[in-house]
Length: 202
Image (tube, rainbow, N blue to C red; front, side, top):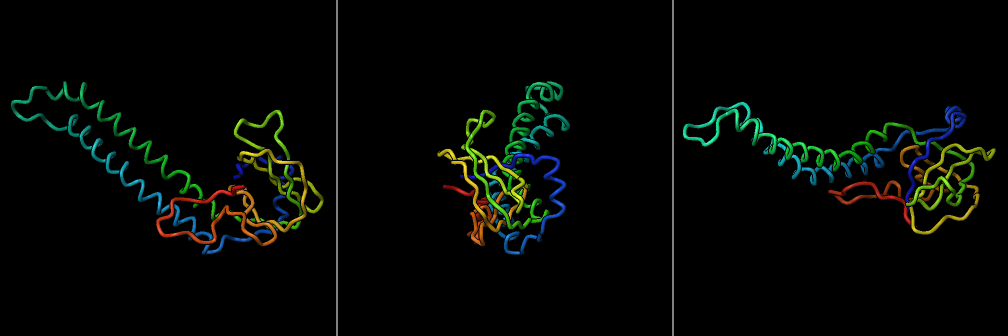
């Protein structure tokens, strides 16, 4: 199971200012950075393809044709160059898709991790729940007012329950620790060349 953020209500955002918070540790940020570096290795292929197709596109548009070429510069720029240009654009989109999630995760390590002595609330799917969701997970304060809630993704529907807990969470990643135990949002360790964050699963 993994969670995705549901935008908190305005009042919950105001209560955020009262929460205890801490910065990400070096080890936590190192794990996320390792994921980005791992994805960077995967991104080498679309990056090279982008450079090749981009160079071909520029060559067909801006450089003169050699003598004896069956096509004029105008013909190559209008007919052939757009084909390579589209290929370059597709490779750029591929490159962005590979790097977007881990790059965004790294930027989120500069936002605080919040600490709450409160409750974790699980609730079952409702009429507004999306098809791939099995319910919601929320952090409640000591007064049981919701601080943040995330959409849960998993195979088995969640049952309604509220459990007291010491919670560490971030709005982007969800709940990092419950009563000092990692939920798997940020792995304790990551092998060199890891390709991203592990989601919490069940």
